[in-house]
Length: 300
Image 1 (cartoon, helix red, strand yellow):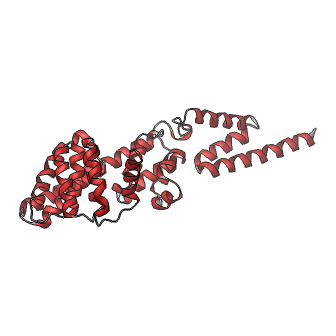
Image 2 (cartoon, rainbow, N blue to C red):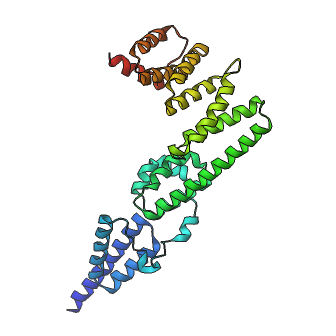
Image 3 (cartoon, rainbow, N blue to C red):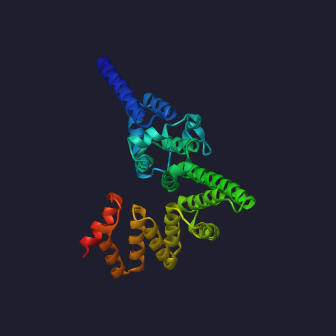
């Protein structure tokens, strides 16, 4: 009888050790691992079954965590871990950020979002927007706070550029800086579309002044076509894209912009005419533009 008890005890300890180590390797949460260890040790076999039941419950209802068992309703597991930097770029190289936010442990997702503050937040906006609708409430909350911080920083920088422009409105350099910053704000995705109206108006004023100059640059023309297509100003987009092609026939962006404008106008005749002229243009086409051309030629 004693031999049977000893065998069962040894099996119990081995089972507990293997389970806890395996669980900790997957989730890396030391506090929850300790709770599970205590439960398994003091409730032989039943503790193991209880933890398995909790694992099953968490898969069915991922928003419910075990934090409340040891931190209370207001607690969050391993809060100090949030201060430990995450190598965001390295993690993004290992796997797409969206996949990381969907499959990573909750505490890792939270640390990843917070660590984005140490990087150029604008580069990770797509990650933040995905985190905003994450199943983990805390991750979503952190993403919201980071996006609000980004909006504040963007507005401060824009106000600085606007002030510099107002102080020297005839400066080409200041006009260019303000145009780039306004375009960056509009295209960033950091603001809702209904919040961009004033930025569209400001951008068009600055852009009109730049395009009225004797030799407009390719970047000004390209940016204006992008904004015109966003705002639905197709007539102006048509004029600007035609000017872009005429002034910079070797620009691939000019080719793509012209194709996109023709598609928005649903003008097949003008599109075919333009595609027919491409062979005579000194532009070098890459995958970026060839995907449009191959698709359109295949649609004939």
